Every structure is written in C-alpha cells, then in structure tokens.
Length: 275
Image (cartoon, rainbow, N blue to C red; front, top):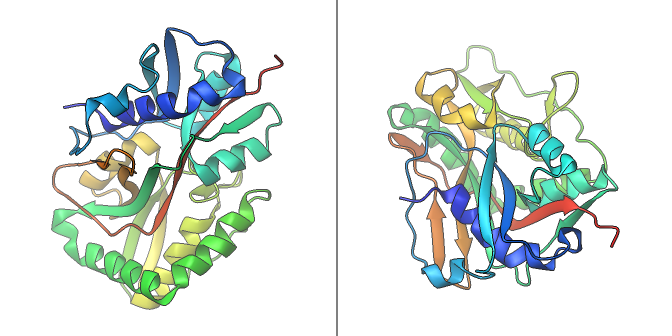
C-alpha cells in the first residue's frame, strides 16, 4: 500500500511544479517536502495511475518532515524544490518571506479536507466533537470562523483567545502542533491561537466542556492519541481529486475521524527564481 503523502507529492509535482517560475528548468528528480503524518499503514483510493503520472518525465522524491520549520530551512537551502501545503498556510508563509512564491495547479481539483481524530474507545469525545462540527456546518458558524479567524490572519498573526472554563465539567485534551498557521498556530510565547483555537472555543461553549491544549509534533499525533497523552488531534480526513474521481484517506487503525470542518485547495511553495 502506498503512503498518502507520497501520493499527494506526486499529484502536487505533476500539477504544480512545472508551472512554478521558481523551479527553473525541468529536472529528472523533483524533491518535494511534506509534513509527516506518522502511524499510517496505507490508504483507500479510487483513482487510476495515469493521472498520477502527469509530468511523468520527472521522478518525485518525497521528503517527510516532523515540523514546518525544518521543511522551510531545507527549502531555503535548496535541499528540496517545494513544500506541499494547504492554501492558507502557503499564503501565510509567503506573506512573511519575500523569497517564497505560492504555486497553484492549473485547476483546483486537488483539495485537502480537515477533521479531528480520536481513539475508537473514546467515543464520548468523538461524539462531542463531531456533533458540534455538524451543528456549526449547518448553522453557518464554520463559514464565519473561516472568514474571521482564518482568512483574516494571513497577513497578521492570529490573536490569542482564552478558552472558556466550566467548573466541574469534563476536560478534553487536544493536541496542537503549530505547523499549519493560521489554522494551527503557536506563538513564540507558547500561546496557541488561530482558527483551530476559535473552533475549539465554539465546541467548548456548545458542549459545555473544558479544553486543555497539549503541544505535540505533527508526526507524533497518532502516538499521542494511542498513549492517552491527548484525547483528540487535528487530522487530514482525506485528499480528493475531482478530475480523476480519486479520494485518499489517511487511515490509522483503532481511530474515529469526525466530519470535515474545513476543505481547501492544496498548493505548493517554492523559492522565487531570479531567471
């Protein structure tokens, strides 16, 4: 079974890298960075191999990273050609580095769908999170959060918000990484902020629960869950390709994944070329 991140890198390379001004002339090997998921065994797919071979003269080498900072250092040093990211994180990074360009595919057929994940034996927490997400999608709250707590913070850092507290209420431990700003953002002082924190605040208010934030590395999310360090993590529910009717789901045995709370185009960032 192929790894979804390698598969996504091939899609991104084929759809984007040939159109990036930063990439220069075509090479035989395109090294592309992706953030490590960790604990994944495989995927379910409905696509066909021919679509994966757009730009087939290039070989895509997928370089995985535990955190965004290390990936950015390797991008700047030239070790990798590009990094595959969700659109708003790519814009956030580019807005803070004049040497970085955001590359878009010819179409927006590749999308990433974000969700939350718990262990199967923690269904109470799953129900709390999933029910709140379903309600927020139905009543328009999620659309409002996307406008005011995500798009609004591409140019400026997210503003930290206090999570509500309810005396005697259940506490849910949520893992945050800081690797997907302005969605999952941790400031230099260690304070978490951004879209995901606003989402958690809304969930806490609706379910009358307390949220405790636990900072973890991106690749350690499944381990943090299975070891009970956290009760839930933010997760990629799937990556879809509308042009090839493909869907790739990141599957971790023994877990439950909520409905997607946010979907966005998948793009790449690269260093601008002087040519």
